[in-house]
Length: 379
Image (cartoon, rainbow, N blue to C red; front, side, top):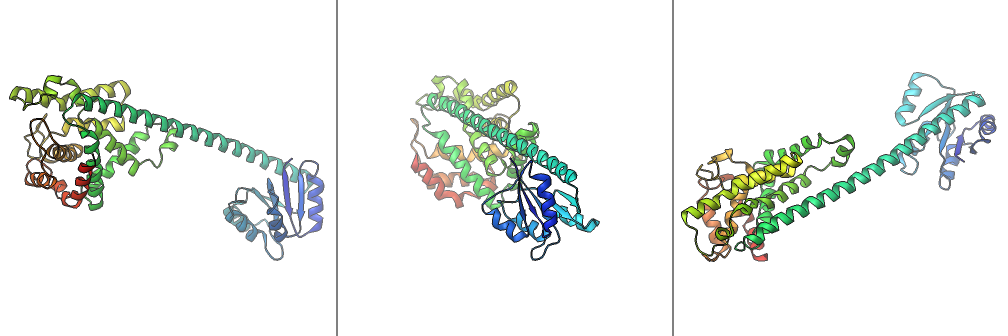
């Protein structure tokens, strides 16, 4: 049985309300707001009938205190009042009252109004519970999809790593270098608008979802979207799947012809991801993966491959990966060369500022040099 509080300093009104409601509800009649707050410590009602004009704490003050307390804020309150002017009603609705019942009230009107409001509250609670359940299910589904995506990326990246036996954990290291660079660039305002734009792209993508999915996706911009971009970089060398093992794992330097075949991995990687997108549809993750794969061997001066893009024609993803990729190659042992020290690798990249690499990104390197060195030692 539902519980009703009736708060009024007039005993006659309390008696009328009790007679009208007691057959249908558990009714507590209270002569003041102070008594109401005492009882609230032990009993939570489903609805409160609250007089406005009372000595001590009046109805407006009592309503404000109710709404300010998380324990009571959702309890529907109906004002009982002899006042019917617009200003009084407006103030009550502004504070959160759900309805007004004028005094003196009749028992049938009081009973029917309460039945109507409790029915509305029931519908609201049921729909809220359903929405919470659906949101939880969507969140669970999103987490499962995210795990599936990460697993697929890991499998694909591992396939490349295991085929290319010469690079040893290159993917993990370059992904970490990219995270370091992006965070440093954001802190210093280097291409910050473009990086923030990636989060806006995620918002545009989310607008293609259902309304319920948008609720789940809300707030997934910012750091989350940046992590999706960073994770997508792990597929930058996926095109090496299309390169024969004889070239990929050749222990000596490549011939000119073999090098041309090796260079095809950038375009092949873009093609592979395009094929995946054709089957699954455009995806925020895959769009960035394609840019990393297809442009990380372009050069700032336009002499790179596969398209010979120049300057900012090269996607930012490719300009960042170019530095991470070359740095890792320089500090790593290969059958045909020895690793060079971290400091020397940084010096080489710095000398190629404005020719091979984006000058603005190279200028960030001195600030993150120690972090790069720590990563290179840690793997």
